[in-house]
Length: 112
Length: 253
Length: 120
Image (tube, rainbow over all chains, first blue to last red; front, side):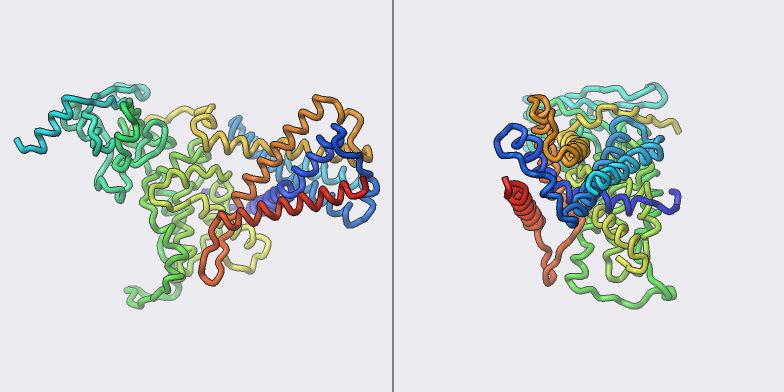
């Protein structure tokens, strides 16, 4: 068994934090903005007004980034288990976590 | 002939159940083949009793491991109808009229028939240093260290492991990638980590990509465990411990 | 010694219910990622984007809602495995921690819905 420094504890913490954030915030947000508002069940909220407060904007950046890290972590491991591609783990890790980081940056650019 | 033996003979004549047993004889089989045996369908027979009937009466060439017949030795683990089970504690009554398909534990090389090679696990077990580590004590160890019921309770559940390897067979991560340290070894490491008498530090042994971080928490190890050890919980708890220690390097446990 | 090594089972996740639920649970992450991308589009457009009202789009988002809700239930259920909470030596049973998690989820969802719909 190889002994070496590992990034997994930090990735796991991001994954776990993202899992909690996704559990608490995403079902209600996708239900409202993805289903009920477009279907006309409820009125159209003013998103610009909702994100006016800088604390709200910071919170959104943090929550989105964490959720994306959560998804990246699971997609990395699950694709390796389902598709037997463990040997390209490093590449997958770069693509998945890199994508999550990029998503966080884009969210920040959109909001600030 | 005693009455009991007579009763058994009559019942045996009346009803049978079919065992489909995986045979692998390296001198003649390139891969395992199934062989069927009809054995008496007794309400109080376990699958292991059926296999022993085969061995004694029908086919002496069948190979399998067993010892205690009471769920303690951990040697009769096999795949029964696709599930890893202790065959001494898995009864015919569970399977109706059968047939019952008996295969060696998944995830291990097959030596012969139902006998698997567990050397890989023995290496892993040793890797986690599953013993009490004391510092600065000379042999022979004579001091006693009393524990409170709470201190015993902290690790007792993990000490129930009988090394039967059902959890390894149940774990898709291990079956797909045998480098994974695996459920029982990590649970046993936790058994000593959580023991108040232990002064060892297994962080470097467990905080590895192939150790706790290889686990994706399928949870089937816990379901398979016949002794309620809950290896999945042991691994998740150590993930949290290792993660906290990674960000706070001076903290312990 | 000649030993037999079983070939890789490519359909391992169909072999029992736990495996299948596990893979379903992990694949919710695809919809978590989709939800974030969609919400980024919402922020960009100042509200649901123009194509959001298309039936196929609503269908995708209904699935995304179901997947994220499944994620929430399974993820919050697993939490007590990593943390052992003891009160005066008594180990708080898993169902209480899970119940607390699910209650917190409902409360947070209620607050978010209230804040979003307050001005509507």
